[in-house]
Length: 77
Image 1 (spheres, rainbow, N blue to C red):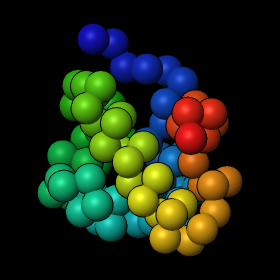
Image 2: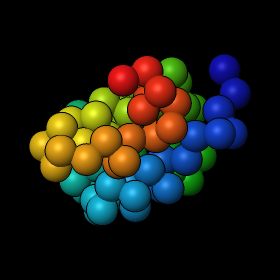
Image 3: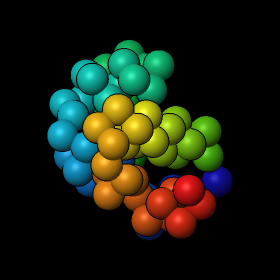
């Protein structure tokens, strides 16, 4: 499955104010595989995108700020 060109792990992570290690940990990944997702060295699967969106949802709830969510997730909420 080709990478969803509308989804950017880097942009989402930075919008959430997270470093790579924290984002990886929250997604249940070690640092290196997460870095490979950001650099497109690893095949991005739908579950990777869902995990990243789940991290965004968790943080939005923690911070009580739905603006942290990607637009497509915000529309679903």
